[in-house]
Length: 191
Image 1: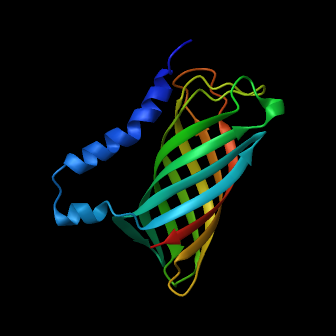
Image 2 (image 1 turned 120 degrees about the vertical axis):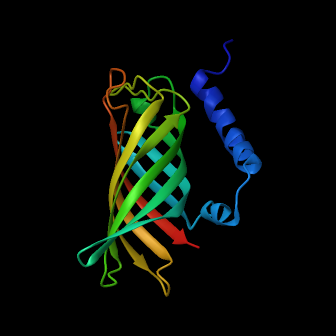
Image 3 (image 1 turned 180 degrees about the vertical axis):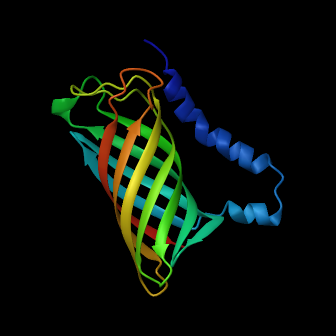
């Protein structure tokens, strides 16, 4: 019987290591405030026989720009996703876990429109290499990109719903690099 693979060991150790680093770093009040998430989200979607269920936290970053009558704001998302591979499309594994850290830019009209557009690019790591009968990734480390359109609602606009197009690939670090595209529906609750 073989032991856990390197990506599985990384996935197991990463949350503990991150928590240890955060707890041992001396931080001022302003820096500690920056680590307080501003929203939590749930999302679900699919890609050619693979379903994805994601939960995560988002942080508003202090970087923002005015562009004509619009505003562009920055944010950071950290998430955990569980990918379920349909049995007819499986090539060995039936599921995998994914951790992601994605900085994003959000464009919103300065006239108070509840609608927004978002784009993000970050890094992901999966518990094993993604493979189905149709696709075979070569790395557990990948880049994640997304485009989204969404709408805020509620008395303080504390609720958001968005439709997202997400793409994961290793950007040619190793081949094969077929990439995977997911269409996701997200609900986000601001604190």
